[in-house]
Amino acid sequence: MVRKAVIILGAILVVILGLTGVAFAEEAAQAARSWALYLGAALAIGLPALATGYAQGKIGAAGAGAIAERPEMTGTVIIMIAIPETAVILGFVVAILLFVL
Image 1 (tube, rainbow, N blue to C red):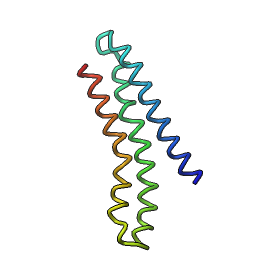
Image 2: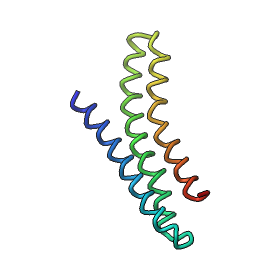
Image 3: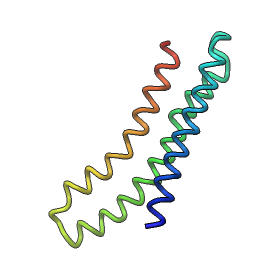
Image 4: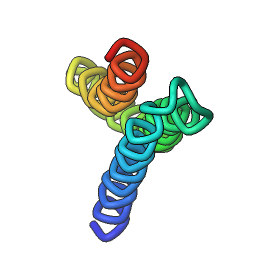
């Protein structure tokens, strides 16, 4: 139970750090595509990607065991593996918005 809480809090921290990087990059964007803009976009995608990879690894390992014991849980496990991916998708959207706006 404590591990799950640590993983969730870690993922939240990574997303917050990514958004902080985006905020700094947006402020620096006033100076015509400075290096901070690119750094913010990299953080917006990279940090959630690392957290998602870690989370999906843990979920996948537990899901494989669950499916081995109860094959009817396959759909649930697939959904649980897909949920963390939304963090990377949102990071990608933020990175695109940095360059569009």
